[in-house]
Image 1 (cartoon, rainbow, N blue to C red):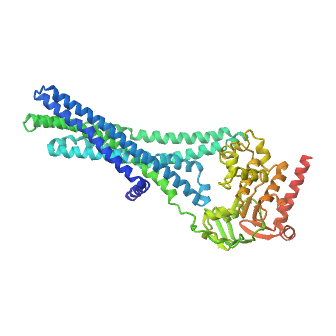
Image 2: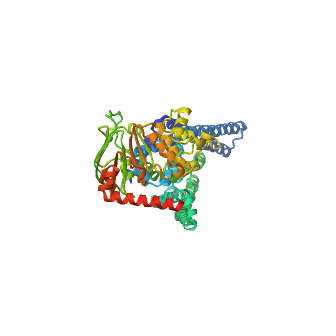
Image 3: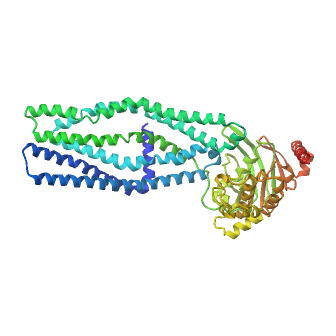
Length: 584
């Protein structure tokens, strides 16, 4: 537990380090503010003592009343300054942590991102990072100040009269016992609460993302039940947690403020025996009331303190993951031929590729074919460095990809997948992602060459039409054509098409095929296709089965020598014939 707490503090200090001066100034202002809030207790005590002594000078009471008023005003001014400084620093920290997390995701293997529910990542990047705010913006200045000032008052009371100082602290041990009992199960309860809410987030994202399929297949009841069950479990985890701590919390909050339980009887006894002056007794009563307020304020942050190790643990888990190993200095590539040597790859325990060796010549067309799940897409993604190769090696232009910066690989490879993601931006800006500095004319030229211009101009706002979240305002075929335009604008020397015509209807297939032909002219092309008729002219066709290459060659050679390819070709041709008959 000590190591975990130390690690949490270490992470918080690392996050806050760039804004250290802001936090120091905030703590100083908070200390002054709390001190100013306690100072009036002293002056009130002096006023009461003066009244007991028969003092009737109005000017004395007016002056002390004015001092108390000024002190309270100054207290709120310094508290406001402290809060402003701490929040300004904290919101900057939150922004920086979010940027670190999102930047980290771009450096991690794609497998981690795909295997982690998007709801869980969203929960960490949004809600979890937000929950750092109470610790840094409030606990750091206010808890520090309240503890420091309370201790200072206790020390002052000890100097004035040790007996009354100890009397004012009688209820604190009993309150701490109740409080410690409440906190004994905190970590386990909070982890259960976090786990249930992670599951709720993931289920909610899954439910919303899959609403079209849910409606289409009349699965609303079952899917909604799954969501409501997750929501109920999340709510129950919080209710059960609160219920189990209610008695301890109520007891602690009742006992802690009851300082007069010790101060009044002990003080009265000492006063009646002549061992305690009246002014000291009154001062002890007044100051004892001022001790516990700051301590209770400090304790009110215990909930956030209890959560912070779990919160920082989730954030640190992502930030501590090893990056894909890449240098920063650009490598010299002797062309754009690609070579794989004894590559093996697995998703956790599932072996996907086994001892794959392959050479892809520059400026050639290489098609990857095989049954679903054979490893075609994985092989293409490894070439694009979406994952690191754990066994074997992949080289581009004679250089191992692990010796090439990711930025250089990304600049030299265009990857067009079967399910392309478009941002909730305009069509123009989605195409411009291929080349961020491109002019409007360059964007429109790429759209014309990819066969997009005509359908774009038919939209209500043309190129300024929003694509919607994930491109939801466009059809699957339109999204693919936008993705091809984006890749065409990028103009990378290596192009990977992973089922790039999967959502193409027969009417637009010729348009997209023509666009793809322009896109890949004079480039190294790797294409994955189930429609074998689209890759018969490839320079090389590679047949993959169960994660291994079983054959490679041209279309005619494979028809003559590869039984699997023959079977796939026959199935493809018969499917086309059946479709023609159905449409006839």
